[in-house]
Image 1 (cartoon, rainbow, N blue to C red):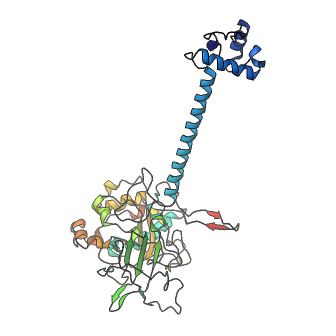
Image 2 (cartoon, rainbow, N blue to C red; image 1 turned 45 degrees about the horizontal axis):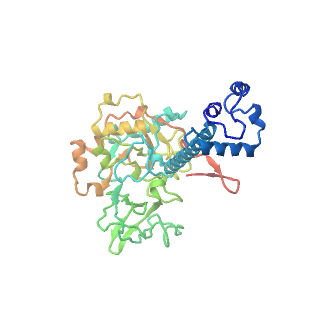
Length: 428
């Protein structure tokens, strides 16, 4: 302010508004922006009149530094506030997308084409840094015994039967009501299975769909346009349409955890079978960026269940039996290159290091499944060509089952959150 007033001319007939030497000294001592001396007690109306007169007589004079600084600060505050608001909105959108299983954040590995399970699902959760179950060694010994007892001590790689048969359907695919074939001789009709919005109602099964060979007769239908997935067990096509013994539907599958609720689904655990198979596109890409489902001979008794399994069909009451839903991993420090595995075996091993296995079902032999159905319909020799002449029961030869680590029971299960009524409710 001292600099500006020294440049203007006094208004005729009025005292000079320039500062005296004493005023300048006081202002310099007080610091910028501090008013002192005679100006501090000046009549504000008189001061405004003086400034108007000065502006009129000296139009080319510089604007007062204090007024310019105030305006500049105001603009800077507005710009900063707007920037903070934009960043907050972007952060909220990104968090919401991640929580709801939408597009993965930057750095999240991209999965196979048509893989419907988002980053929120249990199938895409890395396990590299997870803790180890205190009974891991004993539980792994039990698994190794099950592997050693079948197929010459080699776990099977199922690509011809007892695996997930997959079909992706377009928007507008005609739907059918699946008939309930009560092969388990239930004495009641399960709630939610049939009728309006039932699990077997309005299922978009392509007329040329082929269930997986074998007694399980598994069939998976995925509808990207409605974000729904159906898995059916012991399904067959009859003269009157489609029938199945059991199965289920996952709505909003891209945002789901990757399992069926309320007792539905095609696997013994309620976990989605198709999610844990080796996909055709996984092989074409050369890597598996999701967990693998592991079927074992003797899972723990049905009342011993580890999340994310929703139930179990196990009967093993041994102390260290592996429950359905339990996770296992291959330690990251295992040198996969030195194991002498087949190319498919190496892919499985690397996926086991990053995402691990999830025990999903009971089977006649320990096995991992490969995707069949629509993805190989136009290339029926895909798996035979990929295995390079190695039979399915030798694809996993040399896999280091004895080096696996078991994760703690219920590892990764969401913590209970307070419900509106005040009680605890578990999300997910």
